[in-house]
Length: 631
Image (cartoon, rainbow, N blue to C red; front, top):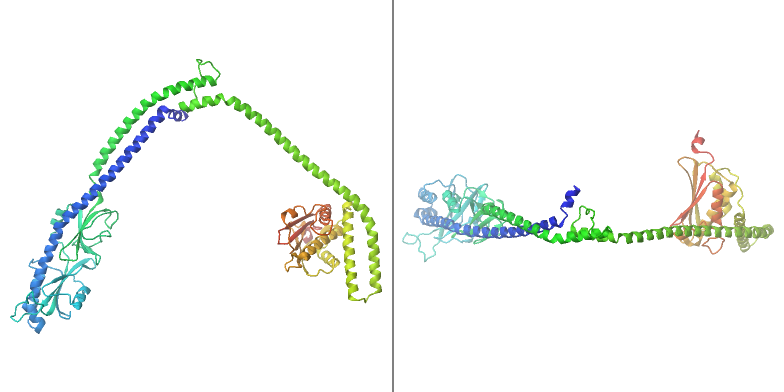
């Protein structure tokens, strides 16, 4: 397969194929253009031929209408009809007169209806044979408007009843003159009644008409006004839209398929004669022409391909010699030494390009090797630099914590004594003035709160210096949380909601350290909502919820507030020591809480979004797994 592909990639093969393709496209384009041109000429000529062939047929139909007009006018002037319309006598004579008009002198049976109406349009005599149409609205309108004059035949548009098409004509019956004859043409006598002739459109003489038009042609007679068309045997689908007298159409869609046709008006009637021929019949002569053009195109393409192959051989010979010389240079061989076989699947120009590319390959390989070594050394250096930065950051953190521990150990013990004295003094003052003024009680509560805050700060400082080994025991969360909330005291503007069910198992934690963790979390949440981040603008809602894990070996305690929340950059550093966003405080509470949780085998995580509050989750080990407790 590879050898075959390589064989066709040479210019000796590609150039002839390219020229053959160009010749093929050119011949196909010219053939298609000639086909469309001849097609247009044939269709136009067919339309003109049909227009000429329809003229004699239209003339024949007009002559038939003229004879019918003459017969109808003579019938209308029969004295028997005038006498019957005037006096009502001689009904038999009037019927015989109508019968002569009905047969039209042909002796053939005519299907339809022949009516004699009075001046008001009422039917006084009626003769019908075979299928007959319903009462004509056109006849009623003509009589009502008085549009018919004596001696003038009016022909209506074609009408349809089921699969039958009918022609309708009307002639007025004039009143006799004083001499008893028919009225003169120069006068306008009174109209006594009307003879209405409604007969089935027949196709007598159709064989001669078909021979005149041709075997593949068809004709229709119809009224564009009513949209009724017939082939003089049955009702037929209408021709394409836009048919009018004198029009020649080449159409793509009709009930009988694409074709060409011509329309001619039938003189003396509101009818049109439509003659059409299918497009396949018109274009049949082009089949042989298309076959000859295809054979000629094949000859041209084959001759062009052979000429292109001869030309490509003259062009590619020098290129092959040049490519061979380039191969020798690339192989570091003498100009006349035997060269290696050229790579397969490449033409001469590609071989030349590849040979010169291989001459520069050695320099490129050396440069790529050098760049690879530089990139490898750079990657190692970047890795070492990152490790050095991490080590430096960790060292700085440890130094800060060491200094903080020394400072906390020295300052914490010095502050505990004054705070104890202040607490005792506050107790003595409360005992001395139990019923003091409200202002005094308010300031005493303020002092008590500040002393408690100071004690927490001192406790955080001391906790940074040493973390006492925990003494874990079973702690019932419900009672424990209630005790810590009571210890917290009043929280003005903050509603606390406790969601701890009886099915939550106890946890195994150091009660003192758990108390410090919970107080830190609740205090931070209350302070955050007190800064205006709650749902009501000042304060908010604090939710403490405990849930047991599915396995029953862990208990999650979540503290959720409706405060202002934290942006991502603050959330990432919330557990770093000495990091705080408050105006007061050392930023040690959360760091100490995480350290105490880790010492007890628990984990502390935070989740928050700006404007959506914050949730701190303490994941603790259960004292007794749920399955064991149930057993």
